[in-house]
Image (tube, rainbow, N blue to C red):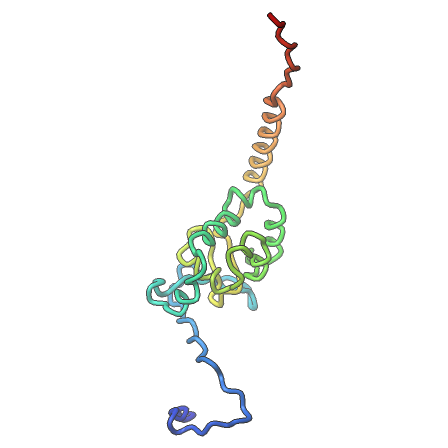
Amino acid sequence: MSSPPPSPSQSQPNPTAEQPTHDPPPPPPPNNNNNNNNNNAPPGSPSRGSPSQPLSKQPQLQQAADNVNIAALRQQLEYYFSLNNLSKDAYLLAHLTNTNPPSVPTGFILTFPKIMALTSSPSHIGLSLRGSAVVDVSNDGKWLFPRRLPTAQDIAAAKATAAAKQQLSVNTAPIPIPNPPPAPES
């Protein structure tokens, strides 16, 4: 067992060594909530996690998000992973289905323009999705898992709806009316 680090009054500064400007944040608390963990994942796969503490008990995350609109970030992320969007979004769905269990890296989502406009920090992604009914975050915060994937029927229904909307917009386009002749002078 190693001895505790010396107190600041006992330590001697080393002018050639770089001194840290701040203490690193403490590691995240262990996740004891197994309701959302994916225990059937193959070895090496990301495991799902859920918060073990409410947001108010995680001051380092709250402090990191002070300048980020967490609610707007959550709304955008939940939209991307919603069943409605995934039924239409072939790009995101293809990335999700390339992994087992279906997931995408947090860094991948950070490349989406609307997410980039809100944050560039993976910790903000994890913070915003705490308690989400739509998306799970891995224990290490590096992977995002949709809670539901669209079925073939969901995708077919989304395509039919899009086709119907397209047809409706074509059929209801305004008919151009030629300019009326000028009124006769009286």
